[in-house]
Amino acid sequence: MSQNQIPELSGFGGDDLDAAFAKIVDEVQDSSTNLTDDEAVEQFRLHWLGRKQGRLKAISDAWLKSAPADAKKHIGQRFNKLKEEIDRRLESAGNVGISRAQLAAEAIDVTLPGLRRPLGAEHPLIKTMNEIVSVFQAMGYSVGVGPEVETDYYNFESLNFPPNHPARDTQDTLVIANQERKPLRDRLLMRTHTSPVQIRTMERQPPPVQIVIPGKVHRNDAADATHSPIFHQVEGLCVGPKITFSDLKGTLDHAMKAFFGSSVKTRFFPSFFPFTEPSADVQISCIFCGGTGCRKCKHSGWIELLGCGMVDPAVFALVQAKQPGYDPKKVSGFAFGMGVERIAMMKYGISEIGQLYSGDMRFLEQFA
Ligand code: DAH
Image 1 (cartoon, protein in one colour):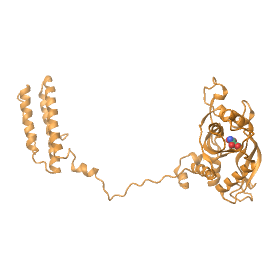
Image 2 (cartoon, protein in one colour; image 1 turned 60 degrees about the vertical axis):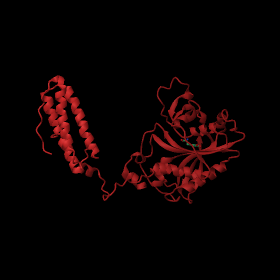
Image 3 (cartoon, helix red, strand yellow; image 1 turned 180 degrees about the vertical axis):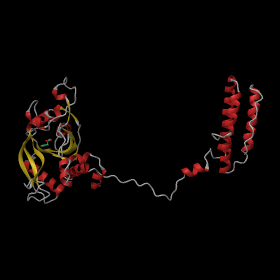
């Protein structure tokens, strides 16, 4: 296809234009008789529609340049029709302007190696939390969750921390702003522990309950090697007729053995939590030295791991308003709570809590 001369317009009237465009359509027709292979189609496309040297553009430039302003619109409309005609022919040739080069670029080379997506793995913190939870699931516990933004009532008051009681000072609290107009019990805060979900669970279902509650908690603590203002706990609650301190000891002793290994021993130290009476701190024999004393256990042979106790009757009494089944004369129970970071750090020998939150692949890959 050679570039023909650009035909002259004999005038700008409708008939003149129709005649001139009809000639070009003939030209298009003549040049499209042999579009039998890709090469020919591409030649045709370039000849008419080529962005720089295409004939359509050359004609349009020439005709529009010489046209008076009021004729430009009429010429433009006819060019649009002409362009449609060319497109139609390309389309019926079965190949709308896709060149061989373009096709080659889009083709898939099945001999190339594929893109390998590395498999993800559980984060060591989540892994630890899931492992703790599954130890209790194996004992028949269900799993629950609760809100991270909590009311003063559920976080403190229902757990027997009265307003202004010094026990509240043990959990430096992040409160939500502008709550002062509400009654204290309705004011919102970031939960400082997962214990409020004990109350929410009992309010929702009558006894017996056996539940573990993993989750995130917040405290207004400065970050250091072992503290973070956001961390994770697993809470536990078991309530039923005749649940005793022996059940508590047996359950936690079994859980620690299941989690850390059967040679681990536990011991219970008197402690205080407002919502349990009596309360205890649980220590396990040092998993590093087996109890003989080392740097990790500060040469005591024991490591403190969690808090627990028998549910205080005052807690049941508050829940009873919504669930009469929690009559402290008829049911008893135990509860426990543990910090997941502390356990993960001990299990994996991590000395900086911040590494758990860093997202650094060099750190995380070690646990994959
Ligand atoms: N909520 C306590 C804390 O964050 C931990 C705790 C202690 C939970 C004793 C319990 C418990 O359920 O019985 O310090």
